[in-house]
Image 1 (cartoon, rainbow, N blue to C red):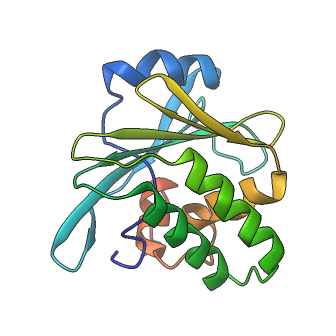
Image 2 (image 1 turned 180 degrees about the vertical axis):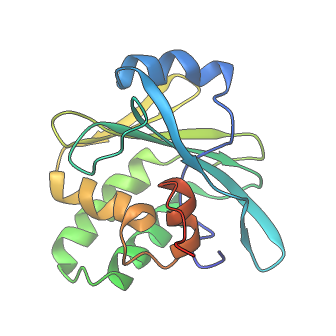
Length: 173
């Protein structure tokens, strides 16, 4: 779990600052899964948690991905790393990636140890981002939403163990 070190969102408990936001964004939000700590080399980067209505995740329905950062990162680096991860999954439309990168650079803040960010897939298929109950911005392109959250949730993710934890997928023995 090292490649996605500079991306976005999460923690193992809903922080008080985010409880009302999550409740307002997803009906009956229940934790689907949470990650063990995301690390890059020997640095702890973030903890991630996925919430969905009644705990039932669907890529085509509202959900919230929460990242609780454990170190300082520049928002611009998070945005750039997000684009790199989308490319790794096979997305090749450079014109869209450039537009999305500009939007993410505008939206994503610099983070510090303790910063919690929420990435929301809403009913319209848009991506909405929050920090400490504050709206950071929105990207209305449903294609962005799919490819952005696929960084964590697609079977093409560079971090398959993280995906299993977030989606609470049990290995068959």
